[in-house]
Image (cartoon, rainbow, N blue to C red; front, top):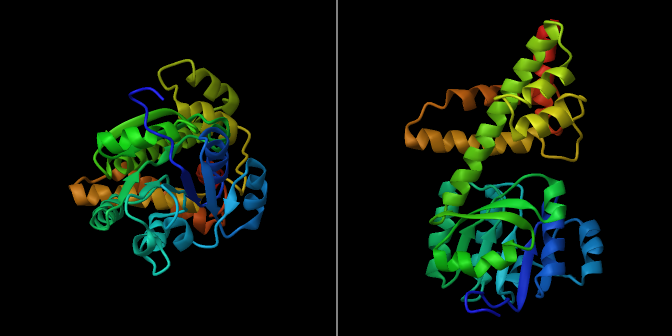
Length: 302
């Protein structure tokens, strides 16, 4: 171990083995050198991860009392808050010195309240929401936005590096969530613009594949165009087991809440929120969220 490296924790806990959580945990287990204890309601990912030597915990209470670092990868900030504050949860049962690392997308106010309450109990709570795709989680090339003190960041960075290629200290606790929430807001608005362009282009006689390919060679190029546009909107494929409209709207609502608290009239985000509601009304709540592009097709064909 070099002078600037943090010691490897003796044990790691991981709660939430969903679409992103399972591959993240797999990388942690195979690369960190620490024992990993996991918890999820679904037995299938627990069985798959057993091949990496991870062990299943019976409860968050058991985990919080025994591990050094506890990662959370949960569907919403509300669930994060429940796992932390419940009678069988982390705050009531965690041992002093525990560091909880929230990989979920959680509202900024919930994050900062949890951090304050953890500190009162002699524990730490930091935010480290992840960005990019499930494929990136599997490859260990996620982008992670951390809200923490510099000392906490250095402590946890070697662990995050097992599943991320880009790791940024964004500021104090909550700042990682601010940037992740705004990252998603901008992404959603770009995809809405791409959906508009697709509808207009097709009605004007241009194939969407040609449109997006040429746009990618000009100033309209973007990650959203090359991924959400070319890989979902062009083939019109929006699978069910992916980042759904319902989850995307949850993240966008966090952005709208933050905008309201800051006195910003986020009209672009409000427009996308209305699109998400329309997609939900159309029965697409559980489909991959760029399915909002179909709304523009329906309007064009009306």
